[in-house]
Amino acid sequence: MKNSTTSIKVDVSYELYRELAGEICAPIDDSDLTYDLRYELYTSKLTYLYNIQEQCFRCINSDITTDTYTKEDLSIIQDAIEITKEFLRQTIREALISSLNSAEKKALHGTRNSQHS
Image 1 (cartoon, rainbow, N blue to C red):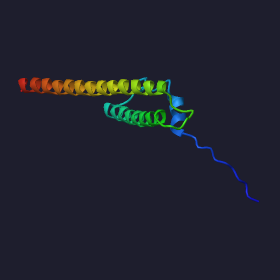
Image 2: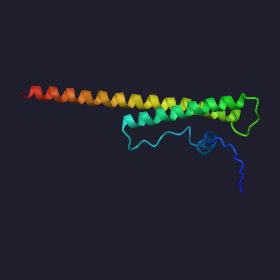
Image 3: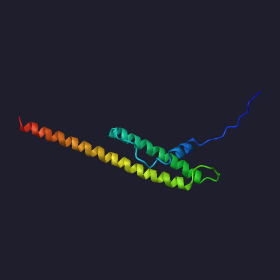
Image 4: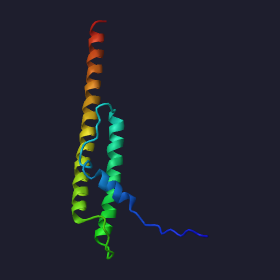
């Protein structure tokens, strides 16, 4: 006896998006992260956002009626992309400033050492 079950196609990406929708515009908790790791996380988040933006756009513009992405979702995703780009730029700026400050301290320390010789 065969048990026939009908499989329901579920858009996992949409379910994940709905789960995360309230948080996709928020910064990553980066208090204990290096600049490199923070950069990688924001880059990954941006890739995810671009992917769901594409899915959302296709869903909205398809002839098939679905209960998934809406124009409001597209707007939220686009806002999240812009906000995440700014967090990424901020991470790069902070890393550069930290690197410059470190180089300046090393140069200052080297100058002091050569004056005492």
